[in-house]
Length: 229
Image 1 (cartoon, rainbow, N blue to C red):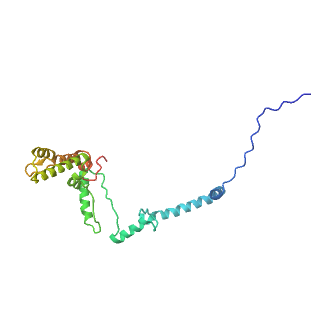
Image 2: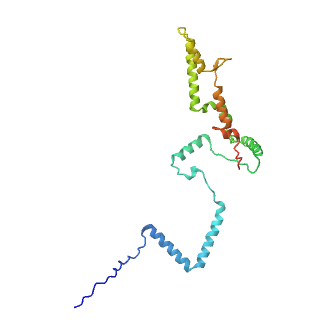
Image 3: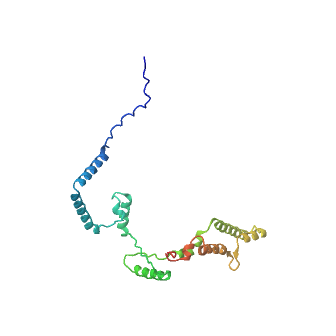
């Protein structure tokens, strides 16, 4: 009796389930797009005529299209920022800014242009402020407000030493010439008026303002000019 060996061929893969169409909102959109594509394929002339009509209507309305960047109109009316802006407008009037740009001229000519335009705009009713120069005079007048930590420590030490010296001078029970000499070294004074001398620190700040560091770009250009361009 002869037996037949089992077959060694691999088993066939299970059948792939049929793809199911997406359901819900996405499915409805895909179905609508499919129907539009089929209708366009079956009636190409009608589809082309419809596209031309839509293009013409869009072109007619395009010149009246405006880009509105006013946040008060773009944001909902119940936003706190919108309500605050409306209250500010009611108290102080409308707020806005206009930028005038000069181009394609030498820097000297652009500076004269900025001066002339600033004078003209400043005379227009409703314009409160015209800014055409960097505020370099302010920083020059308040340069000592921008001291670094080391300079501030030096100013503090000189003031403390001067206060200690003046207290000793007014104390009839104390006379210490050695300490007075040390105080004079710690708090240099102007011999003419016996005042504290901060000229070295002031010179350092002004050098930084004019040559490098804080405010260097303003020191080189009072006007808002891009000389590289």
